[in-house]
Image (cartoon, rainbow, N blue to C red; front, side, top):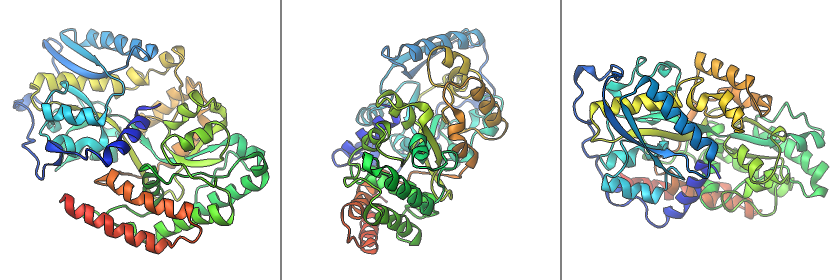
Length: 466
């Protein structure tokens, strides 16, 4: 299971129980001005002669031998440039367990450079554990900075200050089974891009292949997955979950109603969806991997999962942009830097993250090595580069691809603008589960009433969090 998938599962379990207690629920941020003053030298790269030790978490576990060896090899190569930097790697899988992460922040026991999810920034700031790295990050310390999607960097900022650097991200889209499309007489190179087209193609699949137990489309309705999918789908048609102030619900509108109506009609009129919707993370992935559905909304990290765990074939899986293509929900992971780090530790941490995760043809972008090590090459992830860096990455990835990159061309080429998850995301998803469940399990569901009730509930929880 992917790291993102693990977090989705654990976050669901945490929502009703622990919330974000203690430091994570603080009404006001602790001092987040940064670590010890670095003076005017903050923006200069680390001097290779500087002797400094940094601890870094998220070293791949021994159960992932190829990734573990690559990490070790990368530390050795990094030390060719910075021979006086000692990198103390901390084995961690998953890289973040939300409950342990909360406890770690409360205790201040994180490593000097530490892995977080992009949705963790507020929690880290509330705990007072984030170093402000704004003065340290520029095109000298991170040469590809100009080509990192501003929307991705924006999620790692607060009050204009930068607190992290991205290492991976996902953008929601439409995952589909190309073989099923072909068997149903549809063109697998022309996936649907609107909900009307999704409904039409799903019905065609159902009409042609339903007798074989294959459904056209599947969606989730529970375990916070229903709400997460609904937010992803409303983003696609131009709606938001909350307004720009973050204080009021913004989803009770015609755009969201149109998505829900399409889902309702696929389920009850066309009968192109399973009678039982997905109830937890993994349900739709299993259905796709075992060839039982034609389409679902998901993230690129699902693709290796459906292949490795459920024995689908890479050549049979394609990906298209989120239906509607207005905006796409995105998330991912990053590294932040401990508030108590010295300036040299921050510089060394940034240098390591830049080498391992942000330098083309190095670290995670060393595609020839990934190919040799038997890791899939060609998937549309990470997805945070734009401009010349994106073009170069695509070129190198394609030249070394072990999976058919053309299967993801419409997704990659679309360049859909991104939006992050809403504030209090998991609690909002819990509320919106009831909307998805209502539509997918009740033929006579009143969509307007479901949304109005959810709007009231979300407004209440947002007000309580202010």
